[in-house]
Length: 241
Image (tube, rainbow, N blue to C red):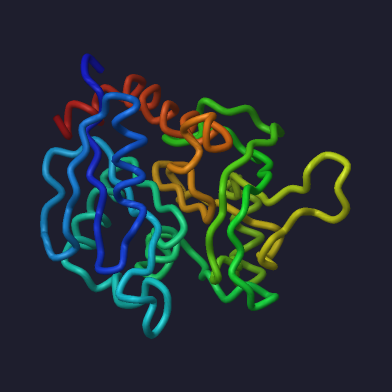
C-alpha cells in the first residue's frame, strides 16, 4: 500500500483501550477513526479493532450487551468479506458473544483480576495479524482481565486444534515452574482466529506493548504484520479503498 492502513477502532460505553490503540497506530503513521458503537457504518476502513475495556460496564456478561450494538452488524459483514479484525481483551469477549469467534471467556479460575506482563507462545504465525512472527517463538504482552478464561466444549477445542486456529498460548518464562496459564484457560489458549485467519481474538493487549520504555515492543510486531498482509492482499485493499 502507498499509504498507512485506515483503522476503525470501535468504542462502546466503558471502552478504555481505544486511545491506547490510537496512540500505537500513530507511532506507525496509521489513520485512525474512532467509531461509536451506535454507528451503523465503519467508513473506508482497511481494518477494524475492538479494544479492551468494560463494554456497558460488563453488566449481564462481558460483551453480551455490546454484541447487539448497531456497529456489530457492520463488523460481522466486514469480517465475512475477509476484512482484518482484531479483538483484544474485551474485544475478544465481544467477538465470542457475537458468534464471530467460537467459545466464551469466563471468570478467571482463581477469581482474581490479573494485570501483568505475560509470556505467550506463538503456535501459528499466519493470517492478518501474526504473519510477521515465527511459530514456536515466545513473545511478551500485557494482560489485564478478570474474565479471561477461554472455554469451549471438547469438540470445538479439538476442531480449533485440528484446523490450526489456536494461534497463541500462555507460556511460562524460561526456567519458571508451571505452564504460565494466568486464568485457567482451557488448553492454555490465549488467542484464536476464525477459519479464514482474518479475525484474531486474544486476551493480551498488543497496544500496550509498542514502546520499549513501558516494557516491550512485541505488540508492534502484530500491527506491522497487518501492514504486510494488506500489501499481500491487493484485491482486499482495493475493495476497501
